[in-house]
Image 1 (tube, one colour):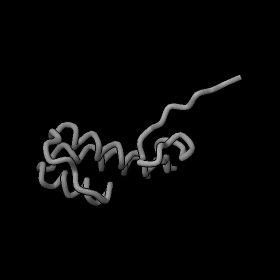
Image 2 (cartoon, rainbow, N blue to C red; image 1 turned 90 degrees about the vertical axis):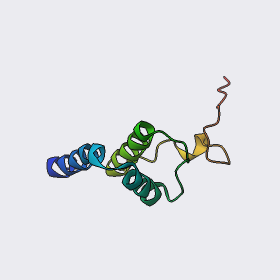
Image 3 (cartoon, rainbow, N blue to C red; image 1 turned 180 degrees about the vertical axis):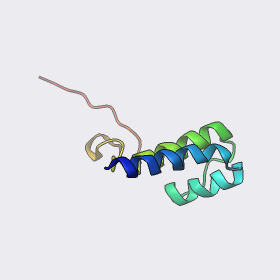
Image 4 (cartoon, one colour; image 1 turned 45 degrees about the vertical axis):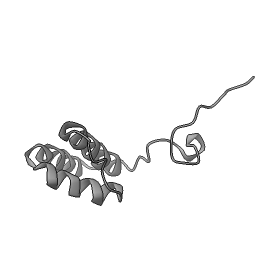
Length: 81
């Protein structure tokens, strides 16, 4: 990722703080393709949207598939010698 692309991502994330809560919910729906939790605070909504924007910019899927549980939650992995 080039410097210009990174600056665009940083600008997009910085602009989130100026959005109304309703607009942040729209961004959540666009990025996560699901409804946001109804009682999620504005601060957590903003952080989750910013995280997803940053994640997509770095093409990082979060957790690797082999450490994800069947319902998309993290599962514990037991390492045995």
